[in-house]
Length: 181
Image 1: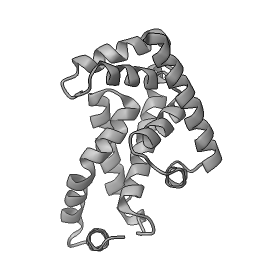
Image 2 (image 1 turned 90 degrees about the horizontal axis):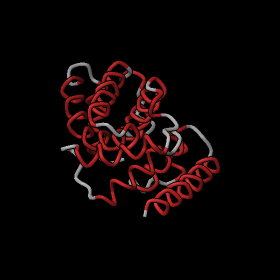
Image 3 (image 1 turned 90 degrees about the vertical axis):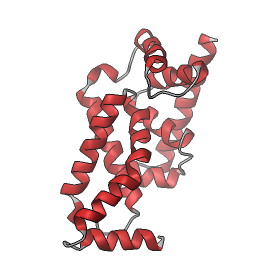
Image 4 (image 1 turned 120 degrees about the vertical axis):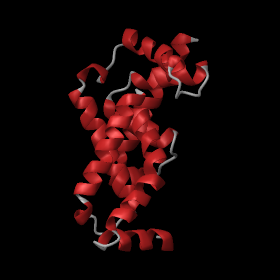
């Protein structure tokens, strides 16, 4: 753990510096968390809502953070759980049909915050067809190059289950993209 992170943890634990330290935490991790959440929930406004809920939950549960893991791991876990909870509540994105997925590329290409090309939009369309857990595992591995051990801690599941989820996700994404070429 770097000295900067240790200092931030100490500042978060101290009532007189807690608010300022939390503001620093929000500035430092907002963009990273936004993109992790955005890849799961897809829509910009939904990602903003989930990100806000993530920081609210982090603030409310700040006393629960013991510094045994990195701040980023703790925040990622909250963010991913919030994103998955959001999707459970918003059932229409779960197990999205192929017809519905086709709209994802159009929606992304029209989104002012999306800076990808048609190939990237097609990849996002394919990812949108995955079940929530496979989509999350795929995004963490493909975009963040996260190690399975770290994912296991983050998602509270076995490395073997994660490898299987990623393998199935890759097969589904590959088949989807090939069918659209």
